Length: 328
Ligand code: NAI
Image (cartoon, rainbow, N blue to C red; front, side, top):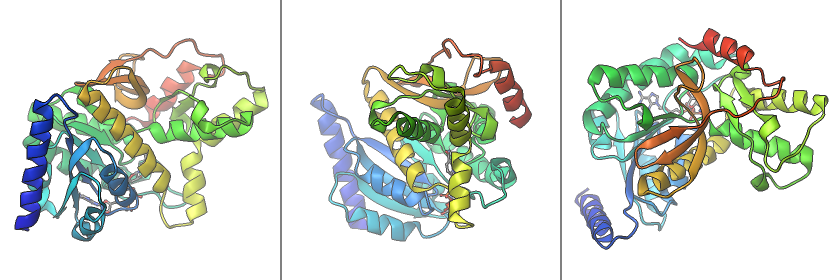
């Protein structure tokens, strides 16, 4: 509507004024797949982020409704909805950060790889739009199997001549949230005080929590290590089975994605010391893509950290073999 157009323009003006005065710039964020189980709560959480000045919600169904709903929250970001392929380019033009939870989720009995055929096509189309309309945006890719959708996105961007490995980040921090939560339960402490690096991939045995590097420093019995590793690797399946056909993790994932997007925006703003685990192009192992701790900055994942010393249990060879089997 003309009013929304006006609001977006005035929000952009505010952002420019703010920038001119050296204040927080306010970023433009798009969520693709915004009407889904993850997309809706994620839209709400991103609307609450003070770093966001414009929020574009795109989906092939129901996005105008979600946008109208979220737009009534009295926070700063101006919200606009975009429906269907003909509006994809408008949704993407000028974005600083694009978050992609579009695709189908798992049902009981399915692995993340079963999703590959459908989600690969969806991600390809969306990334072609990004390459055309906002080639410098940071991309947070949530659609599963992340182990394969990230390499696919990289190929699309390479073909378009816009590929910057630092700007393409697979969202794997739900594995970290789960690890922090389950470890805190075992230690009997607050999950907010726990930091567990989780490396490798984002599917079953490719998810490797580095329990030898948990902060605060602690030790686990062999039984605890087996229990925790198994529960963290199968946290997604735990939710899929509990939802019994109604989808996979949505609320915890939306929380994780909002937290990750906030870290990316703080990096874009130039904050120092922003470190998160993410599945990125990597030289940490022989694998072309790998999840590990990365430092987020103005250019995206500006530094990929080495894994540090691993325990015997955290065998890198086993992990590389499992990841190799799963890469497409
Ligand atoms: P959902 O089915 O509830 O929502 C997906 C949304 O994507 C729907 O609104 C659908 O209309 C939309 N969509 C489908 N095709 C599209 C297209 N071409 N363009 C734009 N939007 C399109 O699924 P949910 O639960 O939100 O999961 C989304 C994805 O996230 C799944 O692939 C799921 O496996 C993945 N996921 C990833 C996690 C991670 O840790 N990275 C954790 C949990 C889920």
